[in-house]
Image 1 (cartoon, rainbow over the protein chains, first blue to last red):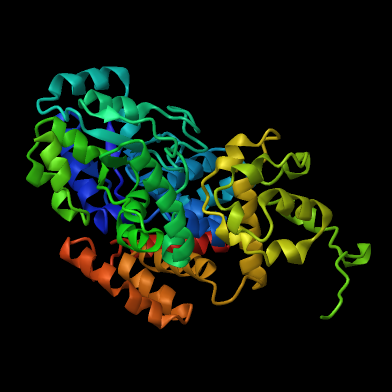
Image 2: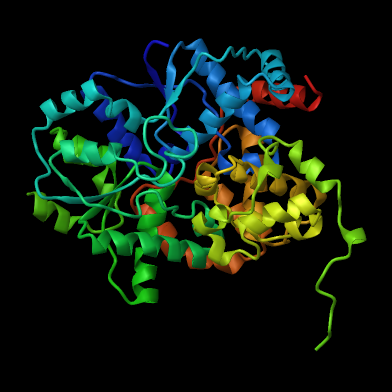
Length: 289
Length: 192
């Protein structure tokens, strides 16, 4: 396909507006302006696959078909959307009897799909060699000395990704290094944040995210850089409760990688959604000046 | 203390259960399991589970239908796929968990008032109707259906922070072409 089309999903229009506010200008800056997929529907996330996998693949098929009509590959910044669309894509073109039935149902709704669309994550697009060189050349405000824990979470690197390692990925570390920041050796980089468990069994969500923040702190990180809305949300919103429960100050800013990248590339910090942070960013501003 | 028999008799097992699960998406390799335990040791949720993933696979293979379907394990799986990418027998363990969730919902044997299956069902319903999820409305439905209205009050300070930073909206999201979505789901139900 020729170029990319942007699939926001529910998070980037909801609690992760600052992800959208930073990823779109960054893509524009590197010469890949993104348009939004017209009338996209939700991916269904893990929820729909737990209820009805046929329907789950069908609603993703609608998005894939709309992208195919626009003759573009999908860029999905949310790791959940990325995995769900990729999983459904693989299933729909797999040739099984069930997949054929879903394709036939799509056709009845005027949504032909022939399997030409690829689903990509922004991190994958931005860390291709020539793109990384381009970014390096555009860094005008290096994040000198900022120690960053790069957090990939689960669904970006597992199980369908072919651009990085499922256990020890490095693409985000390379990208952050290109901004002049110092990526720390974060052993929790692909350990799960618990996803929606924070909303359903808070006790469990609290512990999983505490482990991650504690490890980032131990490695001397100033901030955590994330690529997924649910990870960002979970790591950020429970910090006060953690301090209370574990009697330990594990607080630190949790930012989208695109916010840090945009900042390094000289975009105005007022335009990158930093004001949406719940955690105080003052120490970070003092450090990078 | 009441003494109960802890071991199941052969006749109490469902020998068809393995076939039922094996025929579901992504579950065809399940009987290649060698019980090595790589899945259980990789699972970040295993410490909270009633049966770790290795046992769940053994239960499916040996017909312990009710134990597997009624377990908390399947709902605690957050789909991080660590077990799946590490399994030396290439069993798609996360997909097996999904299959068990679907059977449990279909048979109505999941733990009632337990928030996770409620969240899954409510979110699916919202998407099937409107095409898009609305975060706030999903949370409201979750707390009402799991009958924990007090939990909502506890969430209020967080809600305020999200409001203040413009990260929560009261708007009900929807796609424009809902008719197309209805046609699609109807065609699928009728077997296209």
